[in-house]
Image (cartoon, rainbow, N blue to C red; front, side):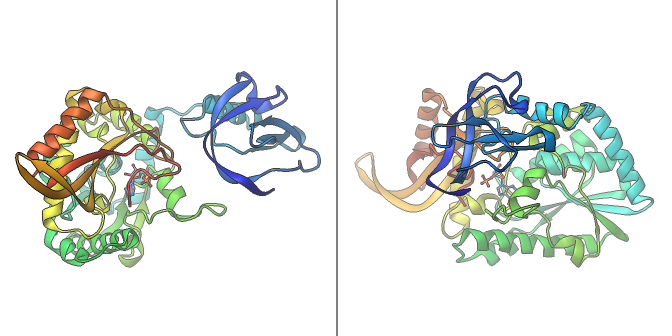
Length: 417
Ligand code: XMP
């Protein structure tokens, strides 16, 4: 393997030669998703080539006798056609898996495991209103009832009306009590003047720990922390096996367990978001909660480029609420992985009536994805874009220009920071 003359990101046309066990039942040519900077020049002894692309003659090889298989593309991402078939061939044909997983059996097993782990202990859970922490709370609540204590931290970088809507969903729809901690001032004070994306993420993560720790000190003898860590969080923020660079520091409650001497309960650690949604539906979570677009822990702070201050956050919240409302009323919400507004630290010249304006730029970011690991920008209907643009420039004071982000992941990430 050597560095490739041209790095390969995004779509590649793959052709397999019919000799690969992993490609059984897969059409000879198909589209695959590549993201790498190395080229395989020669096969190791005992291996044969099974597929290639125009840029990379050897994009897959295998040695069935030694049960070793190599692919230089991503079969696990939704943008690779027949990726699931390739993985199924590996799991069923090579590993001899039987495929007995179902959301119901997973839920039952997980609830029983939580009950066994916790015994008669108390559990605290940081609830955000997102599908991950909600499904986590539901599983733990099923397992141990009122010995679960859910805490929601209002960090001042939430979307419009979010704190109230999460409280009512938990208490009214799910019957799980929720303690809401208003820490808006604290977070905004810490974020004052900070521009660096990584520093914003770290500050919010650290402050969250402090606030959460203070709130849980009031609780009776808690020994466990439940959190909705997903498999992609595990892969993207720690190197599981092998060198997968830290792309962004993910905000989950990383430092808490050690500091508070808590044992972790992470019932979603091996699941992807779409599986969590299936599990949530199985547990009877309302569609509004299960289908909610993901929202990052550092919230609007990573969608407001440059420094984070209250006025800008209000502008961003209004623009974002308009986008969400229009996407819902156009019937596009459920087919999109995520849609949100990013506010740029730039002003541009415009004209309104007879007057010159000099105001901010709002970006529409909408992507399709299955797990957030890769994504394509979503082609929103033209009329929807027209309405969103007119409403944002007309109704949100402080924005006079709306632009559209047409970058896939890779090479971009979904969030701008
Ligand atoms: P990126 O921007 O890395 O995002 O392409 C992938 C997915 O993860 C979400 N995201 C986060 N979620 N804590 C979270 O819980 C975080 O710190 C965080 N950062 C990004 C992002 O919204 C997208 O769905």
